Length: 143
Image (cartoon, rainbow, N blue to C red; front, side, top):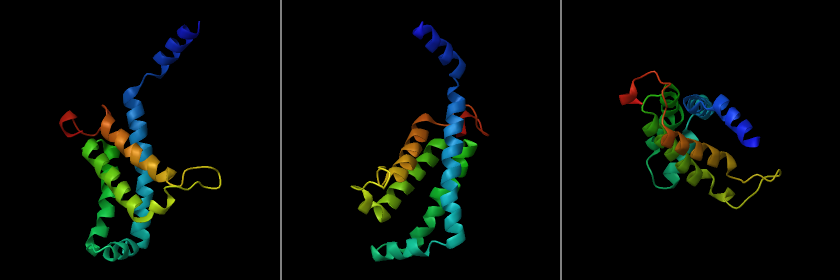
């Protein structure tokens, strides 16, 4: 009985390409909000942190690639896997720059201090591993 119900439910909900599209769009739109905040408020604070670590200031502008350009490519399904890798790298760098103090912390509601960063990072990794699926504005050679 339960197996038959599970099979019926699976038939109704087996839309892997739709699931990939949903993950790509939601993940990327949420990531773009972070990039828009950098457009509105600038990347000066990022550049200052980089300079403090002995790195060149101009690297701060790379955040626009990781938080705007790559997510747009992911939404469109263009070079999805490399774009997702760029987003994952952006999250890794951001976490190393500002999040290491939260590694062993919990929030007031019991969430891990790096929960948001982890969700974005592993969302990017999952997108990289899954690819775009068939819903893309380009053909298979450019997905």
